[in-house]
Image (tube, rainbow, N blue to C red; front, side):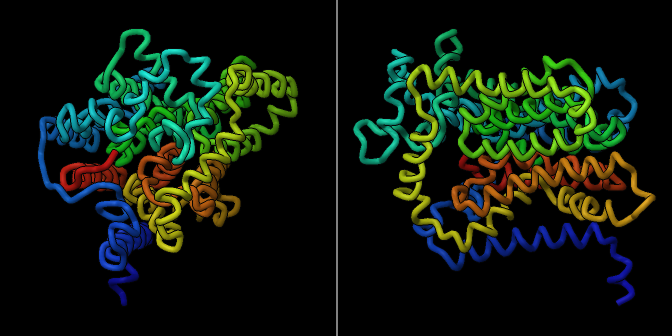
Length: 444
């Protein structure tokens, strides 16, 4: 009993998270058949495939360097230098992890075979006409129905890759490079938001964890990494606006919030994070009511443009729900995925985040001793967690949440700023990512 009491509570939180993953693996593998869950290595979409690749040495070097020097560099670098450094380190981590699977399987082939966006570019020769007819091809029984991921997202997702093709950046290699380069900026956006709302001290402590997140295993192999970055910058610009910066930040935030909703239907839940930012900046909002002019004006731009082009977001969403239940969504058991999805979240955020969330729940219990910025960071993290839980309970995210929930999961990682001994936790994060990428052939 004495030994158990001497174990730090953070380790209990990490152990509970590890047990959740273990339960999801065992129940998924031995209670259900493949045709029930439609994933190869539950709770993840993938298969057991121990391997090494050209990215292995680089991934190990980046991990060791980030663990050894990350916390010190994050504290000592000037803020303006820290942001591009974090972006560069995040790209190095994501590229090296992706290249463990080789150039084609790890990067160039992902958006062609797995997420299918590039496979339909030939059908977008007339963009206005395609937008007008987009909803006519969502249902499975419709003529020339869209592939699953094209049908499952508003057209801005596919249109991004169509436009890349139009400017000469054709093929899976350029598409993958786009997703990695833009997706890696998500960690910078979260840092900007945390600093604006909760102070520079906590942002600096969170930086190494945002760079070395296990989520990078999927950030570099799916378009959802790109979606996560757009959504993160929408929140970051709003945080800058409510912290007393130019109202132009509010307009930019609104524009990106609008785009976010036309990249993925589920990312409308980012309204919760936006509301949390407005609550945290309520004093500035009261003093500058003009904030509510550029923000909604910016939000309206993208929806108005698509509406004028003939795309009906609400009609498309309702058709998608029908298609979802006609396909895998109608087969996968809610009773398993409603908790196994959370095991996927553990795998993309790491055991350190579980421990950080435990510490975040204790922030308000310390009464007068608690720092205001700690409370503010807790509110921001709680908003991200609420988005994720609503998505979970909706039943519209049964499986594949290791990529679908990347935009939400990034906002849980700042909880790691509350952890002592960051190097030990960073080592655990890096080890998890390396094990996942070397032992599994992930589906995304």
